[in-house]
Image 1 (cartoon, rainbow, N blue to C red):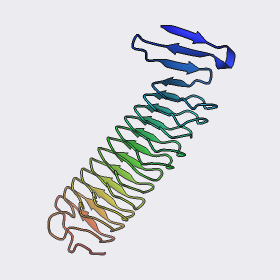
Image 2: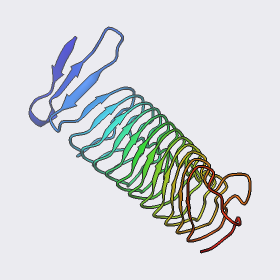
Image 3: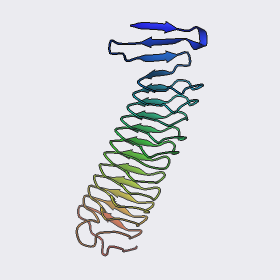
Image 4: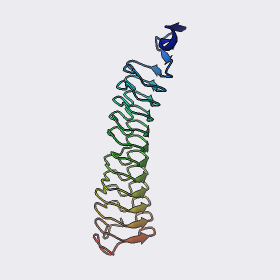
Length: 231
């Protein structure tokens, strides 16, 4: 049924089904539904929290959307969208993040302006785009674009563009690389300023590129002259 209580600024409208669930919208345009969802809001406005413990830590943040169990659980900032079981679970003071998928961005704490879509896709840092299952899963970086399942999982360097399943999967402190193509430079670790384009480029089984710099490899199975070559 539909019930209304309070007056003026304290008025709350609750829509409940026969199962005992509820959806509440207050005069500050906060809409909550689920056990503990948005239960700490004091001065926050324009928030939508649906799911057990969704947005439970927010008191004064504005314009956040969290849907799913533990989504945006501890956050108290502005303009975050966290959709999926445990999406943005650890996000505390970060803002302007879009995290979609089960456990998407689950370890981000203070990052800003990240777009992370995919189950367990992740990135500690700011201004990253991570798309695909487990893309950037263990990463800590800034200004990176990582697209593809398991792509750039361990990246710790900044300003990289990785695209393709398993591309640069083991890259760590690599910086300023462009690597495009399934399985390209799969063994890459700390190389920088490389342009690698093509399926299995730099990952042919011979001289798989690991730590080289300033290399350009283009084409299917394009191979480096040595695993650590610099040009």
